[in-house]
Length: 85
Image (cartoon, rainbow, N blue to C red; front, top):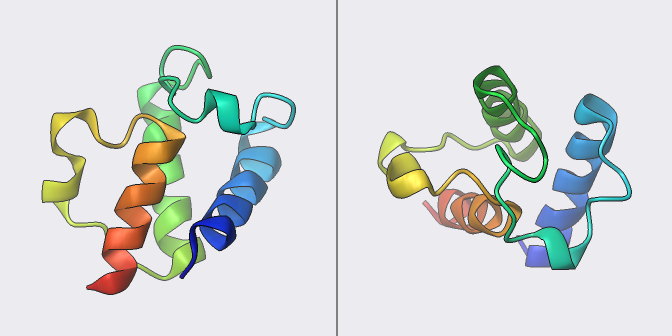
């Protein structure tokens, strides 16, 4: 799966479920979800579930270490890694 396809899928999730449209731009992809996007812990859990469902993947708990699930770029990398395994 290509990065562009993943970003399109993430954009749809962010828009549909979190009402994030304007802020979903490349320049914000390294900004912290719990800071810039004001995600709470329950939002992150919901996002995790939506991503696994949308991309038909199972994210390994080891991929979540070191706050790797807290920016759009990091989440994109996790999805890419999960698709390969």
